[in-house]
Image (cartoon, rainbow, N blue to C red; front, top):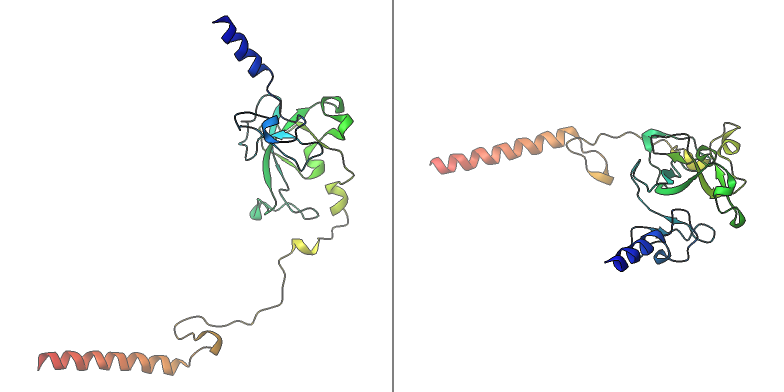
Length: 194
């Protein structure tokens, strides 16, 4: 019995943490509850599609790319088509992260990352980069990808009688078609009574 307890403790005690180095998902979890984000330098153990306040201890649930880079955040169109929710390792200083691999302890909003947990003061371990959301939007100009502007479309009536590419049918044609249908129905009822 003691051997089983020791083995269980050994297996559970050695489970990689959120933010650890990985090459494939089995490096993060043998049960599949954690995945390796190989888009990060030297991999990053994480949990995708996390729920607020539900990440393992020592990590926080965040949403990356809540808005498209260079565009102001717009909660009416949130989340953006590029957004992802995942657990990131929380930290207090750069030494809490894999600094020798290019990671740093950053404030999420600096990179346009939204913290979804109740504790909005969390810092997370992310690859250090020179990109800064504030730098991209300081001049007030929006990237063309942010707008939905296009050429003005000519207004048309898509009511009864709309004929697609041929245009709108004449209203008198639509009413005469309806009258012909009514006349045909009354002729049929007359014939059934005769």
